Length: 160
Image 1 (cartoon, rainbow, N blue to C red):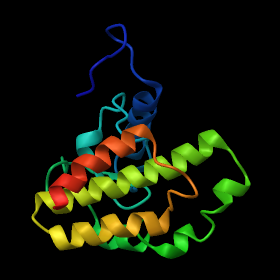
Image 2 (cartoon, rainbow, N blue to C red):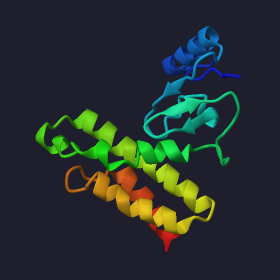
Image 3 (cartoon, rainbow, N blue to C red):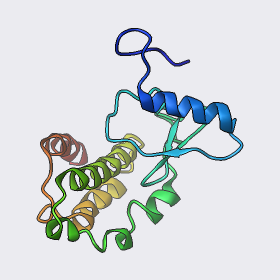
């Protein structure tokens, strides 16, 4: 079920595009997508399984379940240092919008995973990944946004 937003019956263009993909694909092939953190215009969040840099649209709800994260794919992509070798290019080739999306969105994805680990009482692993985040994406290269600073403060309290 998809509800209209923004004026009653209006759909966000991304939601309309996903509906079109679903109607044509009929889940014959996997559907992947990437959205900015807390994009409240997307109606399918409960069905997204995080697989690292992208999420896979599932046919069943995975949000707040043990199936919400594919740990192997997260380790292979989102937490793999090889995928951040050129992160310093952000400083060299200043592109504020792209830099913000890449750095902040990736940090939020990592924090989503850390919060999940905290929720299942895997504090040592959560702490380890929390510390790893700054080595992958140094704040000296690209500072934290205000949203991230607030979120980090909450997570730090949970990790103590």
